[in-house]
Image 1 (tube, one colour):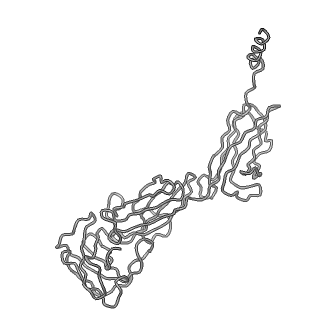
Image 2: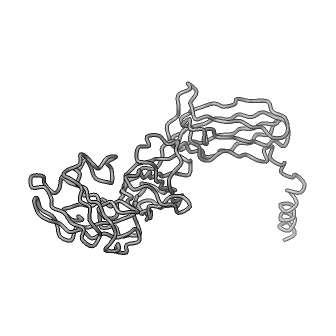
Image 3: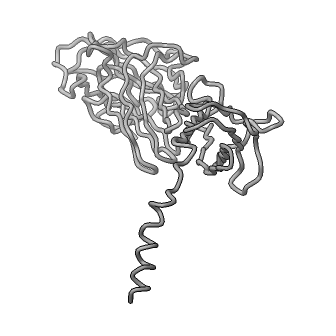
Length: 333
């Protein structure tokens, strides 16, 4: 029993007699996710090592399978304190490494002491895909006022989504949006929605017509994917009472942007156009004008359709004092 007691006491006191020396590296930090795609955002993986005492540092990037990718430092002499480095995402030959998971291996030496550890780094250059992107216009589809444009999008992967309304002729991105919504987090496979009332900033009414809707999805690396759709913003909505036919008469029921019927005495001008496209994807929907305009009132709004033109090839536009309704003379589909 005495021997066991002496042995246990020795085991207990051994660390105090021969204490473990502190590690020569007290901090090792590295960027976990970066996107070296030359968009000036998260271009570098930044690395920081804090040495307790002077020594040497070696840093190497290897692939998920252990294959060497880039040697950043080899036995670099460093003083006590912080040492910093960076990786731009290229291999030793200067070729960009593919997207994926990499390991950053650190080896530090100070005299006979050696310290080894690693950190995971992820390269992600691609923005999340947008699996579904749709824009539906009030009056042309079954979207009901006060919504003028209903935008729906489904990301392929978790994303932060932003919806922006731009002038219909905008080709580039350097433009101030007419209106915007977001960013909002949307989970993989879930639907993001923007029920836009068709009004701009400060709740100002916009000129009636076609607008471009930009749907953007960004990931945690700030990679962004954008798609564009179009919507008709008319500040008025119209529907035919019964589906029209070539050579037949149609009656139109008109409502304001909030969905309330227009006063019967409201002046209305009806015009027929050949159909050049449909809101949603087309950047132009109205073609050549057909026949003469009809000036009437909201209570008596109606006209006769041409005999030799299919109804599906026409758009009817109703101009009212504060808006312009785009109407399918064949009825909302």
